[in-house]
Length: 188
Image 1 (cartoon, rainbow, N blue to C red):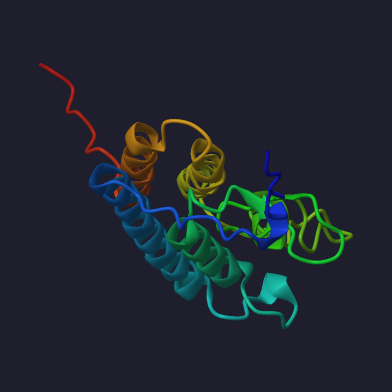
Image 2 (spheres, rainbow, N blue to C red):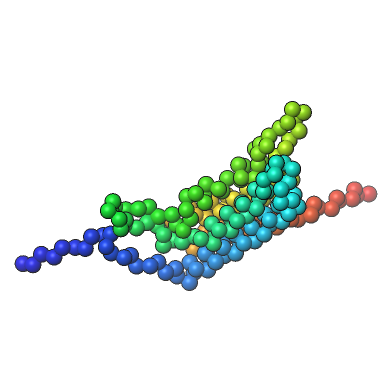
């Protein structure tokens, strides 16, 4: 009887993940929605100015949030679920699904865009935070929530769920841009 030693798991290169055509289409749809959301966020930043007064000389955080959303939704990689460490530590290293944790940490709409007191209230009770209208705040929350959920979705049936999230983003972007409804004249 011959005994063969199995290779060390850290020496074995995993097969690269190749998405099916349906999975690739889902990944493309969420990346495209991220691009549209980034444009929408940048447009809100332009309306306020690159360094609005409430930022006290700092760059408008909507610009960073736009880049973060775009990067996350374009980086999703269902093949990056984890790997065996190739260094001396060995063992299983959890994957990041293409999105580093520090990038996910930037997906905080409250802290990143100053919705809860980026600069706070002055002595005369004047708010000095972001002055987005409520419909834009709601749109921003939907976009950020969908971007965060997109990462979590990769663990399951992302082929069906990512396009739904993309449609949700697009719906929120359209709702944030819609003009108010015309008043209905009283009937006689």
